[in-house]
Amino acid sequence: MNNLEIRNELVDNYEHIDSNLEYIIENILQSDDGSDEYKNLELDFQSSIIKSCNCELNSCENDGCLHGGNYKIRNNQLVLREDRKSKDLIYECNENCECSNVCLNKLVQFGPIDGLEIQNFGTKGCGLITTKKLLKGTFICEYAGEILTKSEAIRRDQSNNSMNYILCLNEISSESNSNKIQTFIDPSMKGNIGRYLNHSCDPNCEILSVRVDSIIPKIAIFAKRDICENEELTFSYGTVDLNFINENNKKFCYCGAQNCKTYLPNLTFC
Image (cartoon, rainbow, N blue to C red; front, side):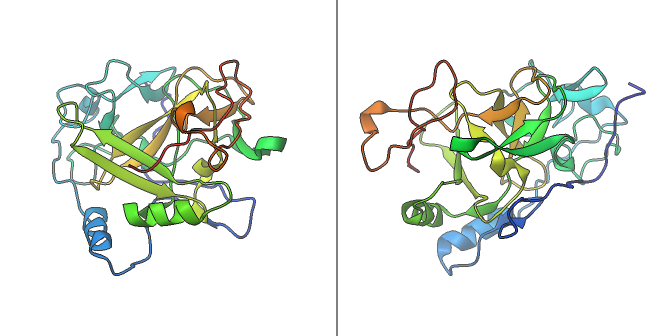
């Protein structure tokens, strides 16, 4: 515990290799298009989570905390708890909580880990590696970019003939599939280090939604297993439905995994 590295502010020292891209450290809202849909998204973006804890010192690591029970200490670092209360939703303690700056339920809000490096992987373009070994459950970085309305996400998706970076996170209630929350993130021109993670049919990372201050989640990338030094970091863009693959939408997958599905996922924003 004494050697645990504690951070209490957001730190992101990375930058893009392309000067045409704008590096941002957190999500930003798309430009106002004057629509009611945008106004609703803006209200959500400016919203604040008022649910707070009154825990003392490090007790937020326990299930008794309103937000806690998400992380544990392993080898002097915070990692995901496999037995956490929710496998999909994570709420971190925020500025409204009474806990201390060394709270063990504050992780994603402080930014990416050190040791990430952009590399060129030839056919599949740029990718991201880690220059140090990562433990399973390590938070790597956020997938940050412009937060879009669904209409704008569809417009950009249909007008973009190059690589599409738009990520759609679907959060579906266990009680009803109709109760779905969608978050659209586009780091194509404004984004952070997370935009460089490639797809793999056998990924070593996973995406989880993490909420801190706003009801709009952060798209957080965690190590799905222990990861070796200099290994490429990947996550799954989704499933591949061969019934909907055609000449107009097929993009070949170059992940190199033994279980590669040949094509990249062809999901639509439904």
